[in-house]
Image (cartoon, rainbow, N blue to C red; front, side, top):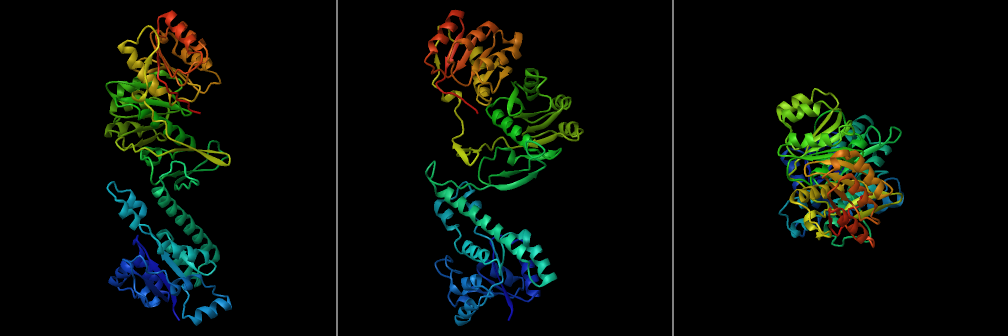
Length: 508
């Protein structure tokens, strides 16, 4: 009696060749629907599943393989006398190989105009059921869900007449990962609760990394298949070494900042904090400002730009040691200049595709923290001028820039800037006045006439007093401290402007 293989795939790449090889190895092919038709058209002998079940496909194809004649063949133990007796009694023959992949649910819901009904019809039922049955019975059954495994199976069948238990177990594990991921996409699509009682997330391996934060740590980079397209996971690398764990963290931080700007902007990042942000009428001018903001810290950093990199900008970028440059595109001349540097990573990303993720996830020991992303912008804030003096037009422009940047700086965060660039950044300090002193010291004389942005309120007037001493003329902060009036009084006494936004931007 011929051994049997059941083949039913939506992704038909390589399936005809695989089926032909199985036939040559003495397998009878069982199939349904479009797969059966394709195999027949390519002269592969096929037995229809309905011939085995003695029952037609019904309900528009929703019920085809859900039948004891199929699942008995998948789940029967080949070396169990009781199972074999029952199978013989009911005329059930074993199925040694199952090759199935599923209705394209993810591809369907990725379409911008997909209807709810169309999505539901692309939820596969028979496919996952067969895969799970075969994977459970992997002691006897070889189950394939990925076309990349066709050749491995064929090689073992040709060499040994059967696949090894180790291979069957490995393929079964892949099946359960695949069906778990498939179910996660479906459940997330149907879920309306913001924080459901269980949260199942699914990611796909993008690349293994040389190491993690440190050389003794192993690491890999996974991407969401359905998520924000504006992330490092969806960049195209044109040149340079493979991305490292820290590169990805820093590159992500740079992208999140640069997307805040509509005008030409350049962002330099070091250790996930901006060290320089500049805007201008051209991308070259914006980069000049970002570089001037901190020409020391930019060394070995990441630069993200929101306009095409031209030759003039590339010349300036090439004179600095940088790990990564991210931009929408590079001119041919710019690429010629920058690719002379062997190791620098050049990445492009489509700035028009800024789809928002529904939530942000951070891992902690033994769990996950989930929250909305911080998309709160200046236009959303309840702006109040709380001092006697209002900001000038130029100060307003600077305050807006500082507010965009400070929410991306690790708390406690202070940004000193003018309307074109950051001048000093204090990040991740244990107290706010310490962060202010770092930012003001970095700004130096340039702090005179500049503005200051804070990610959270001032619990005491000391930060305002430090700003006044340095020559700051306007401050933007959330407000909300029980001692707000002390800070307001200090600002009024010095004749500087202060604006409350009513919202904090903590970033831990």
